[in-house]
Amino acid sequence: MADLPIHTIVFEILTRLPAKDVGRSKSVCKHWYALLSTQDFVRIHCSRSLVSSNQRVLLIDDLTCSVRPIISNNNDYGPSSIVTFPFHHQNNGVSILSHLNGLLCVCLNHTYELLLWNPTTTAFKCLSTPDSHGFYINNLDAIGLYVDADDDYKVLHIKRRSGVLGVYVYSREVDSWRNIPFITRQEYLSPHFNWSAGTFCGGTLYFTVCECWIGGTNVVICFDVNSEQFKEISFPPVPSIGMVQGVLVNVKNVLHMFASTGMFEMTIDLWTLQGDYWIKVLSCPPIPPISLSLWCDITHYVTNGNWFVMTKLGKLFTIEMDMKPFECFYPVSWFRGFKGAVFVQTIVSPSI
Image 1 (cartoon, rainbow, N blue to C red):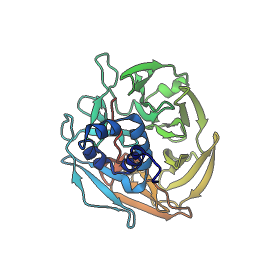
Image 2: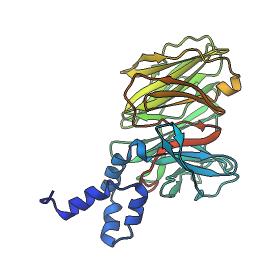
Image 3: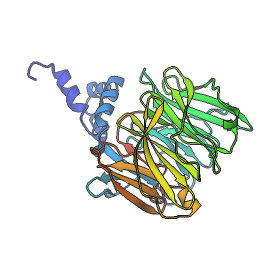
Image 4: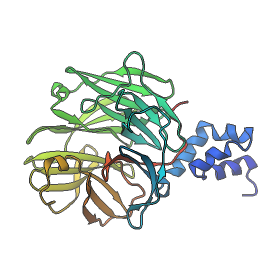
């Protein structure tokens, strides 16, 4: 250690600081400000921040937006901190569509505008343009946030408008949108198909595409973020005896799916993707009958070897998994009755 240059020692120490302490350290001197603003520093700091102790839950209700730490010992929240949105909104009308490495892609419900926002640094970037790019319509559009091989953060926006599908990519590096081709089956353009948000895993964005009735078609659409090519793979072979829902999660860079099926009783299986094929990991006992409206808001997360099946009204089911503890919670759209997400505190900026 004594033989290392002082610059290297300082760099190694600062990349291990909490995100908020990095922000404060920028005011120490001009040299530190320049060092902490480089893309190399941000990238390495981010990679060292992706641990469970840096995870926070962002919760939005009609009156407040709050951030809470996660107490992994009892799977509960710590004391909350109120967050003030740095952008204009109406009655907390903000929907979280996707998140990655501390950045959230959100939609302002009153204007349909898309934004990138880092709730730790409070920095944000509006992605909407005068030529109608960057406007999101719920139940018609799908969003995926990812980073490519050149460390450029991008947003994939799949738009369905009057039977026409358009696919657009926003680049943080060049601060603009562009159209890319997407060849797929025409029936997926129908509003009868529900597209999930994209889940980024191993250089690919994955979307579930499920037909909204019993016995309908269910597939997974894959987007290679470097070649920008799409392909379709099969859904796990779940029974088509009721409504089907697939929730994708990234478990240590391996894609998993919680596949729910049923009508009066719910069966939920956990599958993992190997190549282009799904392998069943485990099944849970059937969940007692619940209303369809409540069932549609089921979501899941895993931590410390436990698998939780959640609804908007609270925890439904807990399973102890015979697996090593994971380092991450997994993203959810609804969390105990609030709109929110689990994110990691980083200094990744929504703009260059």
